[in-house]
Image: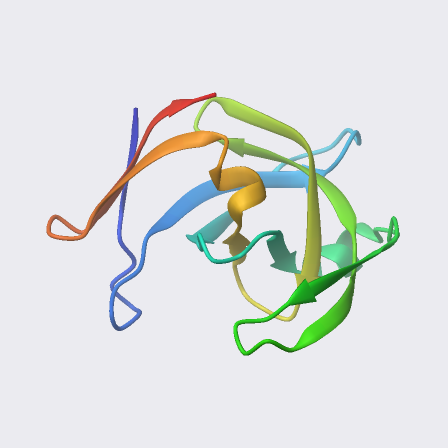
Length: 128
């Protein structure tokens, strides 16, 4: 089991993980990032700075609907994640200007997660 404190810099506080990320199927070091859990997001979003740093090429586009109903075409990339000792290879993501990873259901649905708002912690109990 992994336990992470909520990020109290946000108001209200929010559940975050620490994860490691790198371009899919490429050798090289993993980059440590904070990841905000977003069960409303169907797809995980990474910072566009990483796309530029790694010179990733888009592997197509996807149409995504934002919280306000607006649909946009977004480029698709592939990355590898590590959370604790669990590896998540070949994760489909898109990118935008942000400082952290927005962890969507394409990753969250592979784990059993407990949000304890009263204790301000999030626990990963297991991985499927």
